[in-house]
Image 1 (cartoon, rainbow, N blue to C red):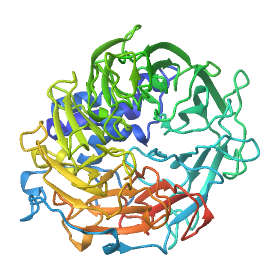
Image 2: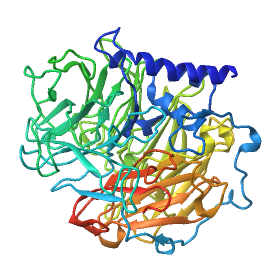
Image 3: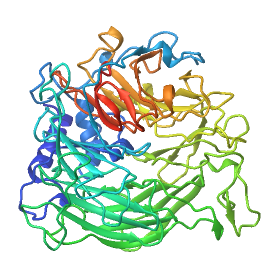
Length: 626
């Protein structure tokens, strides 16, 4: 076993045996650690494979450890054996096919793909709620190797409704996940393991949750019109039977080791929170959240507190945006880098900020840098008053609605941010790459965007990288995202290379029209490299992209694409869900029946498969969306 193999083996052993500082209520108590896939997993990555710097980063950030395990511990051809360590050699890399490095503008419509509208592995009705648009459910795998477990693996669906005890739930946990038709590893149907009224202020769960590493606790934010509450729920199986029959969790000081427990802190008494999922730093057991008036908060006592101890607010930091009124700088989800203590956050004026967040008093580390803004500047942001000359943005969708992606590999962190309108005439949709100090800006335009358009404008959402970017030669990798067409706001795939890695290329490698409907937003992209599936019947193609379109009627879809060649030559499969889908969580690479899956919620009432006249939680297979 060479040095790199020894290092990752030791890292996995360390996590399994000792847990992390923030996961243990007692330093001497051994903690079980599973594998967590939630919204935050999409937003911190490492490129370049098993380098010494990436292995070092994995010591303090389990999300990075999970990424390295996912890419470098390859499962053999058995569905119930541990991963084996494999080092990919250059000849193992997927060859680039001729012609796929040239730009493609093609009228390929989703109607040309294979449709799979009749088969749904399973669906569960969610009552009046859904996972909010561009937000995610969260998946817990009990086995860190992601071997399927019918009882202990679960997905939690956060619902954007107020909870009612004995009625509507806003947190629903589902197990027996690997079930469906035909009958899977866990039988024919999933089970509601618990369903809770997780509200204390009659608010909604508008954003994505975060799971503890042992899977027993869930952190999330409840948002009301004039308040935001941070919660930590310890769930117990059997409490609540469906999305419309919710249980009330036990509240401190009545929590015991045998009960559920809902701990809470109301961190804003002025406004709610519509865009900011909590970011939990497992190393320090602190969470970072925000409110819609441009304030960032650090909260202590998340997953590792004493039984009835409530979370507390350490500090509040107000984004020092220019101007004194008008449009507020609503933050997106903060992303925290533990080693540097830096917190990265964007706002809906189009600005990007870096905050020194590791100490007792927060300070501004860098920024703001204007990524969107619709042609306005950081000294004169859009819609503000009290600036030298108030600026009106050229069109809409000029904010940064989704969190940045942080690539923590190498000597200098790199971040990626997405906006629908930076004010550039004729090409305002943009993805930007910067160093961790907000220097070294590379700005790549990905279509017309929303410049001069307030009618059919669309926000840009999170993209994803292909498997090559995570391998030993990341210069052959690509960033995939959804922009707009060159002359309108029709949704369009783009992919951007890294020839001079780590610097992103200055222009897209290629593009492909998704469907000829203007103003149709895309859901965030998700990718998985599954060596146990052959895409399009090709035995060397295993890199799968899953995304969606969020539109009414025939304009709502979940869509798969083969990105194994570093491009998108064509679509694979689609299912029409009127209204569209939430963000997607993809789990295992198992060969067992129904055990490599995709989870999401519909965005409206649908009649598809077993989801009949309902808003539903959905599970589909990765291969064929069946």
